[in-house]
Structure formats: C-alpha cells, structure tokens
Length: 352
Ligand SMILES: [Zn+2]
Image 1 (tube, helix red, strand yellow):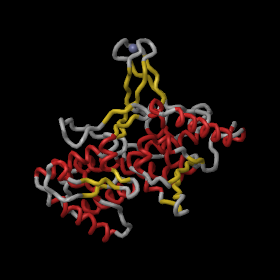
Image 2 (tube, protein in one colour):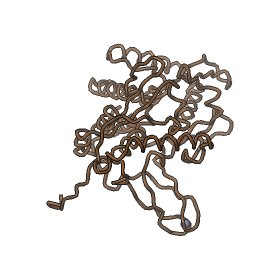
Image 3 (cartoon, helix red, strand yellow):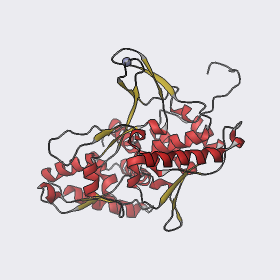
C-alpha cells in the first residue's frame, strides 16, 4: 500500500461491519446475495411465541428497580432467534449475554474522536468486550468476546444500547422522504431494524458446516480445477489481528497486497496472539493465494462475495401515506458519539 488513502481504505474495510460490498450479479455462478428484509416477518408462530415469552421474562427481570435509573447492572441472556439467519454462524452451544454499558465505557465513548477510524474501532470493541459475554454450554467455559462475527458487531452494540437505555430514552430517530409521494417516513434505529444481505439459502445448506464452523468449498463442483478449500467466518478477533499486522507491515515499509487482504479473514482459521505465529499463518495463506490462477481467483472471489453477510447500513420502512416501501441509510443524527453519550438534563453552559 503506497499511499495513505489506500491505507485508510484498507483500514475502513477492516473496521467493516458498517459498509458492505455490493454483490456482483451473475447468471449461474456460485450464488447471489439475497435481500431479506428484517427478521420479524420471517418468524413462524412458534418462534414468535418463544420471542414474546423471552421478552416478557426479560421485562419482568428488569422489574421496577430500573424505573428511575438509566444505567443498570447484570447480564441479560440474548434469545438467539433474534439473530435469525445469522445465528447459524455460531456454535449451537453458545449462549450470548449482554449487559448495559458501564459509566466508564460511556465516558470513553463520549470522548471519542470520530474522525479517527482506529479510535472508533477500539471504542466499539471496548463496548463489546465489557458488555457482551459468550458462554459455551457444552464445555461449560466462557468464550472470548472477540469470537463475535464481524458483521454482528453493530447489532450487539445496539443491543447493549437498548439495555442501557431501557426505557427507550434517547432513541436514534430520523425522517426520510418517501420517493413516491414526498411524505416524511419516520425511522428509529434499533437492533431489530438493521437490514442485512444474506447468502443464498442453498449456498448455506450446501457449503456451510455449522458443527465444524467452516465453509466447505469444492471448486470442481463448479468446473474449476482446484483442490477443496475451507473458508472461515470473519471475526472481531481476526479483524483486529489483521489490522495490527497491516500496521506492522506498513511501519516496516513492506508492500501489502490489498486484494489478498480482502480474502484473509476468510482464509485464516484463527488469529493466534503470538505475532510470529500469526505472521507465518498469514504467509501460508498468501502462498496459497498466489497459487490461484485467473480462473481460480475469479471463482474464489465469487465465493467470498457470496458467503458474506453484509450489514447494509439500510433500514426499511413503509410510507403511511402511500404504502410504498421506503429505504433509509443508517444515520447517527448527532454523530456516532451519541450512540452512548448521555444527554444531560441541565441547561447548556455554552454553545460548544
Ligand atoms: Zn409515500
């Protein structure tokens, strides 16, 4: 990466989770990313009943003690059906728990420099680290927070936000004009309102191995002469390790292959803490990558685009006037800072 703008865009890619990639349209390729609107429509009656029961349990637990305070304590289990399609990209035995953001986390959050991607990235991870926990029922062990899949980070952050501001105070709201009739359509940004692009269900069924947690890809099935490969799901752990690695490479003045970096979170099974070991694993991946001829590359590029889940930055609403579907982009009315910043009730001291 020769210049800063390349470096920044690679960073932005790494920070990911907010901006997705447009799927390539193709006729009879590996698959297409599908647009599936928000989860609630897709729930069966049974799922809905389970969700309602869960919500009731949680709201009982919140009880009256939270009436007057904004920030509370305690872990709250997450109903995995809320993750919808995304749930199958975690081990079945994993339980997720969320707790409200601590005062300290909120303080850190409120003072972030929004222009600095790496700072925003760290603060986001800090929220996940302190407010999301994973427990493996089979092993009876805690699982590290950074095993969260990259595309779910913002969802968990919103979940934490929702448990922090239990009463729905400080909603993130904005209006979008309906394209058809010009009426204002109101949007509220919540974990349930996020809109994702998912892989084809056939692709998932055919290639995803949930027990072993990898994509099983046989290029020969698609008339590409290459051995079978495993692709893995990008996680926060790998993202941050790769980011560190990019920094180190950049500092050492080494060339970074941008295209390879896009494949890396899928090729790397895990990211060990040991920098030398990680470097060796990345080199192995790079050697493999360099063996791909043009045809193989095009195939794997198609695979990569088709096995990812894109958080699209889109919200979907319905115009109350004409009934048309209206799409809005995720916006932070007062900047990303206000996701957790507490707006004080006192009179303003000055204009800054
Ligand atoms: Zn309308």
